[in-house]
Image (cartoon, rainbow, N blue to C red; front, side):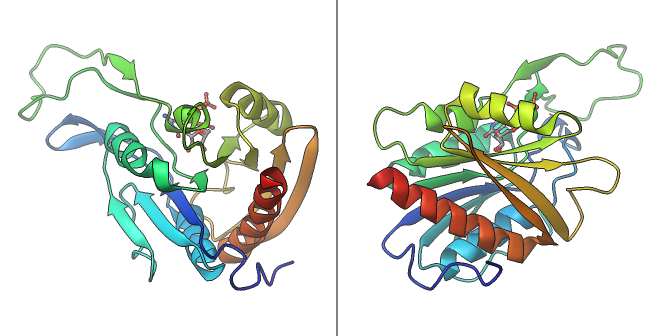
Length: 226
Ligand code: CTP
Ligand code: CA
């Protein structure tokens, strides 16, 4: 329900959350990024805190204030985010990957500003580590692992594909593009888990949606633990 989890349903648990975009430097003044605002990840951090959890938030650059009572670590690149997560994951009971992590970064980041007259115009990219996949594949200290999928088409097929490929416990999928998803204050989610489980969370503002998702995660987490 929209009221969200009762206080204390996650007390004694640690929840690790990634949020926001990443920035992949081209040179000291330019970078590649995406439209993520961080609103959903930050709302999840607040909702998990309200459910009694200790919350660690690893956030790419956003305009949002750090939520009260949440230990927030600011990062820039996907590799920074990867390191920050891997350093802290051993103590986490639940991991929620809400960040929009850049899949690729420029092969080289120039030490000084690239000039218009530099003749090279092609951009060579190399893959970033997939943080979510790596956490889900941990053999020791593997937390209950939740991913997101933002899609412009074939939502369920893509989301279930990611759930299976990355070995997740749950995935929350939403439509993006043309006014949906990123900078908006509300959203709707289709949530899937292994064994065919599915719930729709109807359009709501992100704080309300986050409380519902934390509810669902808590339920599945306790279910998995028994
Ligand atoms: N993710 C991550 N590290 C990456 C890329 C993605 O942790 N390097 C996480 C995101 O935080 C999200 C999930 O993986 O929870 C799905 O991200 P998405 O971009 O939809 O999936 P990809 O596997 O990168 O597939 P694609 O971009 O091709 O749709
Ligand atoms: Ca991606």
